[in-house]
Image (cartoon, rainbow, N blue to C red; front, side, top):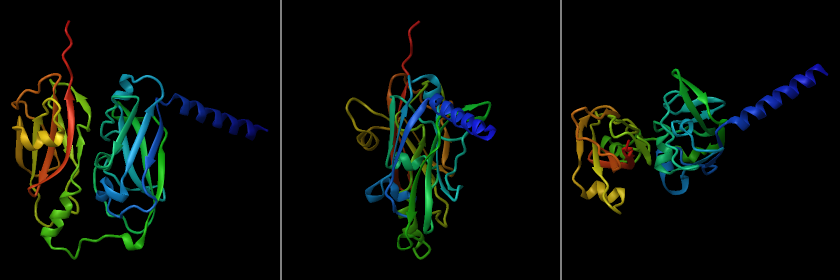
Length: 277
């Protein structure tokens, strides 16, 4: 009898915790047998889609939340460069947020070519308090399998071929697509590195433009004069400089990364409007 009561208390406790989570209804869409290379999950038949909804109002805790996406095998992480306290911003702006294609893949923080086998894609939201990730949702997983004949290897390609295929996996991470940031801050831009890693060093170039009127991000990147650009970057992160052009409140900006003279994914962020006192 004592064991039954203890078990009942544990179940009720777990249900109470689930009800208190501000982020619920996490849905993951991924084919049962996707491409072995996660870089190819941004388009086509291996498209990855993640959707999450807020349980209640869109408060500051949710807006500042982080989304941790990893791939696990047998409960152990095998792909994903982030932890709960370092994951990218979820960028919640509406009650139901969607990450689709390249935006969803970029949340892994790295590209992986998975050997044949059974895996799980894991998604969970966190708030960081005192440098520690505190769950804002339960972990949601999606099972999938990599077939043997789908395994891809790049060892037999030339370095040039490796570079060309690698750039296709280049995705932006932070600021997340659709994020709103303070115009007074110097944002830190991060992106997924070129994969597979070429034998020669890769130089990245960051480009930031203002999106005007009804322009699409692609039109703005290709036609507008950059407000800022920097090349010859060796790492996949860049801190906007203090002496850089001022980001104007209430404006929409597009940014993208180039590697090997090829353009990666394009992301959009908006600067907060100033409030009158």
